[in-house]
Image (tube, rainbow over all chains, first blue to last red; front, side, top):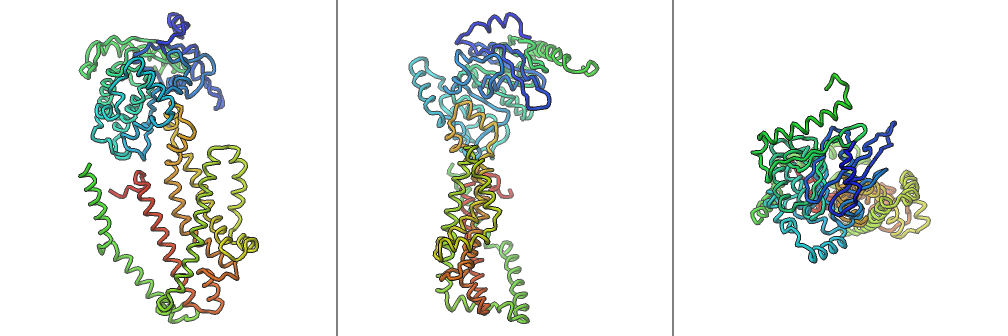
Length: 290
Length: 271
């Protein structure tokens, strides 16, 4: 259950937060209905990097799909800086990075990053006009070549996805999402298929680009280390039914480097997250397994 | 960039001149020679079943104009039917993949049409459309229609879910999804079916010519007229033309496929 403090925050609609209000989602395709999410409240302030972590089946990916507007909640609602998920995606203000890179194999790396410019053009034009009037957009994210170069793909612009390694493909998918200059970036275990070394390198590259764009990020992961290294806030979820077990702030200083991986402060944060995760596990597993 | 392009050109050149190496052509040549020897032996003992290779060659060399003319007629029927059949199949595939109503309405009809033997329909079409080119084009179109339809329908549905999700999160229109995702994803499937139906189109044209007893032109007509008067050398000369036509069509579609689908796994050779 979410704490009462969060509920109070969630009760105020505002344009500076992503709000999930008592969202519930039940899947009825199996023999028994599965309660993927039960009464979840979450509030993410603009510009934060928030990780969602939990055992498999805890509904973390479902939560992400609700925010992305790919699914509708059965109960409750989602608002993204004052707009509904549908309005936000219609305005092209959601960047989505799925678990697999989901690139188009017939396009080069550069064209894969630019392809979303060509769909839903009206929203793109509207946003550019609004951006011109208000604040200038991030220069890095506005230039696909610069963005890809920063992510270490400067030499691979003309290559096709079939010629790339897993890490390069996932970095291309990340560049595609950043290039939209979205208000919120939703990432669904984007590094889970990568080997340890590649993953650490890509994590730092992600942080590097994020520092410049300061996009709000909702990042689903099953790695405690990854969650702590990347995030300002870690949301711990528990399964059956899927719910939020704890919300922890990570006070580590930024910019974060891999040197931090071994620091005492980092270990303390990991320990705290793990303790909450174990608590979430005990609710599910038989005693002797824990 | 330039060096990569040069390297690619060098690879292509190497691949092209690779055909000249004995390792490439020798096995084929030996097999062909062996087949010719067997043919000659069989033909010598059964002259009323198999004509001598020399007699077939003589047919082709003494009156090449006759064969070219009839081959052109058959090829015209085959290609027109192919064009009509595959364009219609592609359009219908897009239609039924976009509209459930259309799929429910038309797919059973199409399946029934497909399981009905074209050989059985051909005489009826001749009765309906006469002895001109039209019934032949229709038969060829029918024979090429179904493979293209089925493969294209599967291909249009082959887009991975995560890719569709990425497009949905930016509210891509159905037209965008169709044009930028579904059709490119379907191309490998379309080409797989084209490799089948290009040679098959000739079968369609020949079957139609067989059914139209009064037809004046085409290699099918040549074969049925010549076989009724036991001119075996003429029959086999026409068959040889058909074999060459089928092979050329297959080479053509494979070459186009290699260009269009350079990004696809099927085109990356052993490395």
